[in-house]
Image (cartoon, rainbow, N blue to C red; front, side, top):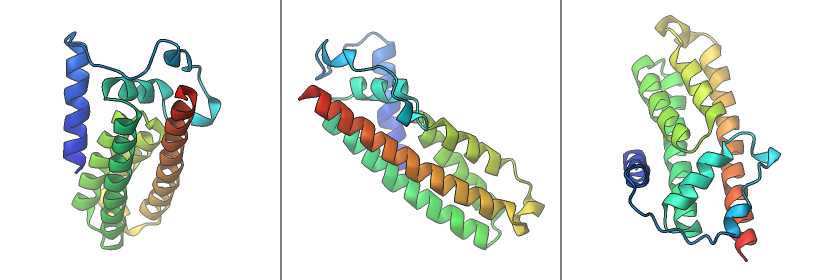
Length: 160
């Protein structure tokens, strides 16, 4: 699922970069609602706006956010299992995948925490730090997803 999500975002981004017209359901007046909103500090609103413009409207964006949330929950589950079983390679793989998905959504605090957990050494798997970091990652993910949902709601309301 994560792979499919990243492929879709990459395909749409390359279409935009190559000059292909990517239709947006936003009108010019709707696009004026891009003033930074401080409550979205966990995610880069510019990235979210770009994703919104790349797709076929707010519904597509909401599907992306839902897919991201589902995929991230699965990765977090794998990470919890890896930490409890001291499975360093599994933790590294899942953190890498989550970092990639979070990056596509501009969830840079989540990206930084994934980088931090990837920098752990194998001998640190038996210490408290992996569990602490995983708690921070879960908390940051939950709040980032909430901000993405609020962003979508704000855009939907601004359109009406």
